[in-house]
Length: 163
Image (cartoon, rainbow, N blue to C red):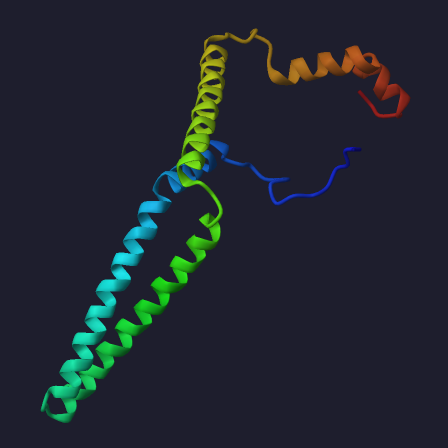
């Protein structure tokens, strides 16, 4: 298989792979419990809907109170729809995966990324201890240019630019 360069969403931007790995490990470690929590919440919402419906049907209230009850019912049903949608999305993301295995794999990957990041931080600390020579950055750049193409005086003569 021949490799070819193709644009991805990760090209041309600074990516925080440590945060990505951390969030991925957290997701797989907690997704199964969060799905259970959503199912419990849906059961509680169903109980609330039933209680509201019973109160609306059996209660002899004035019209204003009835209107408020219907408003509450509408809000609770909207919440139920949102929770159902979230549950369906999570089930779609996790349906065929063994969550325990994914949690273990992503945790191991996170630890590896963390170790790599620690190595880089150690390298930066070593670089901070390094004392640069007394010459300025401009001097260093001019020296590199001189080494590559000759002296800047020679270059100025070639392009007819006064030194």
